[in-house]
Length: 115
Image (cartoon, rainbow, N blue to C red; front, side, top):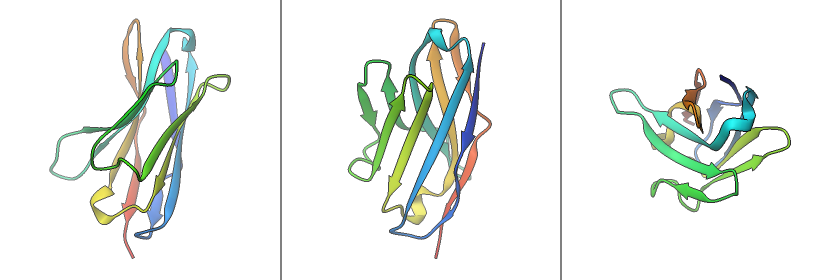
């Protein structure tokens, strides 16, 4: 099994910046990709960004050019740098990892973009 612990989140002003972190522990050798998803009130959970163990990244169109995902393989940690957020980015952000055994999820961290 893999345990994921998110940090960061909270209130950020539109146009500001925020970084989310997610540390993995447990069977980390089995992780093939890590990523961030989000769920806004009344909406389905959606992919924000994802990065494989070799560094290949994908982003939701809505965050391209504003958010950056990165990964520290030595620390088994994935980061999401959020620049120029808008109120539409307000959601609970969940860390996810894909392994040979299946997917694992963090508990989520609230991000609120508001002035």
